[in-house]
Length: 323
Image (cartoon, rainbow, N blue to C red; front, side, top):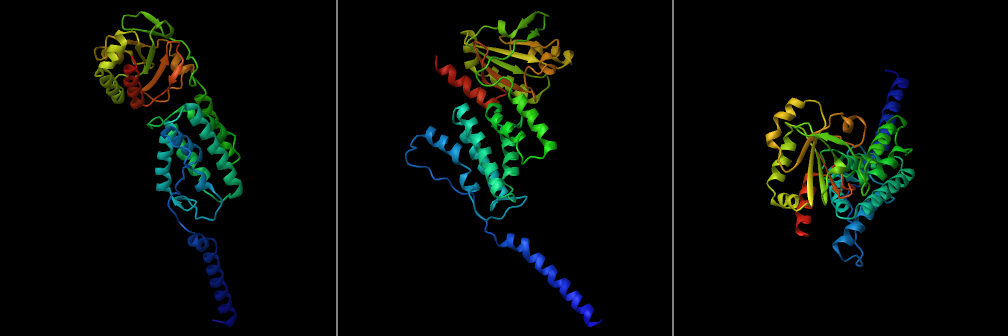
């Protein structure tokens, strides 16, 4: 082999070593860390105040300026598993404070994420946290889901320069759906027929509160909810006192299956089906999955929408004790 060829090979090897010791080894030398703990000022001395402060500042230290390792499974030096656990704690904080405060805090988080990305475009924080927020607060199977809290966040995501333009439409659609029937607003009226063919309307149901339940026969989760509610003496007492009405509505097409399931529905409930499929087709409600539970006040204003069943059960127990 000629000296010239040896020099070329050595030069190529040296270049490969230089590249491998560049970004890769630089990343390897960057420090890893635990999820940074939040320091609560002593003036926040109640559980509510602490939860409110944490909701506003939980991510500040993770997003603070610094040079950290970041890749598909690491966010600013913190392993993805730890970030996921931190999101669970954050979701707990959001659920412990008023809806409007939680929505404001989550909207503020998006602002901080954008500011962080403008300062460090190599960070994985935006992508990871956006995905985790969606998983915890919008996934229909999440026990933390809350469209009112998620709304300002997803709206901001749909308009963000850090989201590919071809993906923004899906976030914009989610924002549009989350804007339906927001907390404190009256839901649309609709008609439903019972097993005898008699027509009812939601707004004709008179009670202190209405538990609106979109269910399907044969749905395992629906059956579990029905059994649980049927086993709660509080529900029977509240119905008997006029403090609660349960409106259980089937929104799909297999009426024979629904009719065969009638014996399983409590007789003290309003049990019916949507004969015109307006719930499903007119986007009156954002029923993304069955079961779906709403709690309405006497004026049919939203207290909870598409609420996790555990929160509904807790609400019933709490409100029964108020009387």
